[in-house]
Amino acid sequence: MIDVSTKYVTLRTATAQARLSVSPETLKLIHAKKIPKGDPLPVAKVAAVQAAKHTSDIIPYCHPMPVEFVGVEFEFGEGTIIVRTTVKAIYKTGVEMEALTAATVAALTLYDMLKMVDEEMRILEVELLSKSGGKSDFRTGSQSALRAAVLVMSDSIASGNKSDASGQLIVARLKKEGLNVEDYRIIPDDAELIASTVRAYADEKHLDFVMTTGGTGFSHRDSTPEAMASVFEREAPGIAEAARAYGQERTPYAMLSRARAGLRGNTLIVNLPGSSGAVTDALNALFPAILHSFPMITGRGHET
Image (cartoon, rainbow, N blue to C red):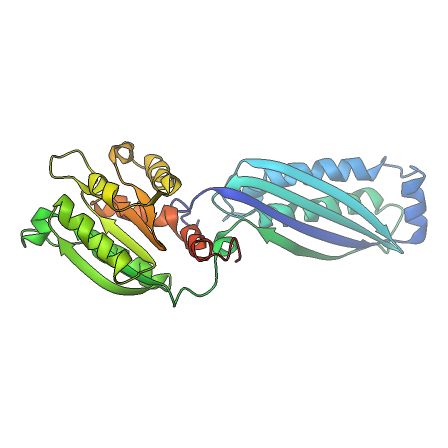
């Protein structure tokens, strides 16, 4: 199975359909409720619901998931029956296989119940019509014009007694997301130096995005949140909350982060903890959805 443990939970939706060719006489028997095995439509609907809920028992690489909704509709054409299924789940991976399996099993159920009256019946096709809720829904186009900086705050790293891992992780992720990292810097845990450096990124360099790492814990030298008091003009609390919530599902220590996020002018500033594990979790929690903030900051609303 594919590892989906790093993904975040979103509403996932998929719609699929199956199409059967049947004789006009068979359609008349269905409408007149004269099929020997009984009315096939409610039976096929129940079969589709059961199939969606048990897809992982049938398809080896599908993940078990909490299916929230299964909708089944039938459409009659000239010599055809279309079964359309919609599946929804709030989960880490998509539900297209659940929708496809539901449509397929519904079609097979119809075939089983109708085959005694229609020897020419055929299942013509099963296809996915749409899906939504994955990472692609949160893309906002090219990020090549966005200018960023990464600031590492650590006495031990600044003094050369320890090497930086977290800052490098952030730089690599920003580049992977298509941002232009214009500055990467390591400074001691000094509140005024932190504040002045971040202010310069916003006021002088006019960068779009600043990510910091370190100084968000409980030690007396952890002063990043306090330094942000003289930097932020507007708080963005949901960003830090999302990172903590994501991390808390993976380690009980995530709640100890005092990281903050906010805006200074048109510069978005996000504090991350200092450990590489916490940084990795936070980056997975925030990207790519956080990129949606930049069109909003520049007045383009919620365009994607």
